[in-house]
Structure formats: structure tokens, C-alpha cells
Length: 167
Image (cartoon, rainbow, N blue to C red; front, side):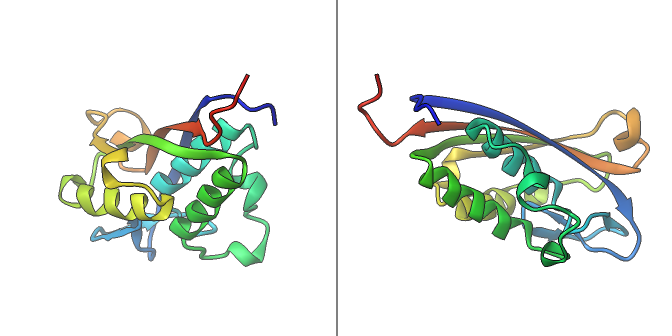
């Protein structure tokens, strides 16, 4: 990898609702009648951040590193996977400078869980909670989120080189 002082990545993830699963967002179990369908715990927020980090490193996406065809990741804790990617960021000579995210869901309301999500994500990334932004919005009943068929999340991640000697 050619060293660059600053890198940015964008991550997007989508999961459909499913009966009989817990709803996990940012590592927080949120009371709701349905959870999200996925091979892992289907934490759409953690997945979007993971993809943003991998995108900044130009290393593909979450499916390339943790394929849903691999039984080792069945029911995996997405915060643990995020922590592994944060370690990969560091091994590539970068540090996570900032992460900002948006969760799009008509229901449930996520504001009461925002700070817990920020704390969990910051801990997984080994950064201060002030470096993690989490917002939630409805889609005014438009699209699959508005019809309460699923949840999507978008994330951007800013990485900075640990080396000051870049040319």
C-alpha cells in the first residue's frame, strides 16, 4: 500500500427484518418485535463502519474478510469483527481519526440507545467516544425502511497515517 497521510472510506449496509432474532445496533440489543436477518448478529451499523474502514484501506468489504459462507462467522459478534478490522487499520500504519454514521429506520426509535452505541463502537475501535458520531433518521415512511422491511446504515471513516514521514 502506498502511504497517504489521510484516507477516507464510505460504508453502507442493509439488512431485512426477521422474526425470532434480536435487534442489535452498535452492539446494543434494542427491544423490538423483530431483529435483522444475517449470517452474523446482523449489526447493520457495525457492518457499515467495518466497510468504511476497509474502503479507506482499499481492502474490499466485510464479505471479503468475513464471508457469510464461512460457518466460523455464523452468529458472530459484529463488534468483535469491527475490532479485528480496527487492528488491521493499525497494522497498515493508520489510526482511526473519526467515524460518523447514520442509521435509517422507521422503527424503533433509536435516540435512547445512541450514547450506548457510541460507547460500544468507540471501545471496539480503541478510540475516544468523541470520535464516533451516530445519528438516526426515519425515511418519512418512504422506501423499504419506511415500510419497516429493514434497516440501513451509512458510515464514513477518516484514517490518518501514524507516520509523519510521508513524501
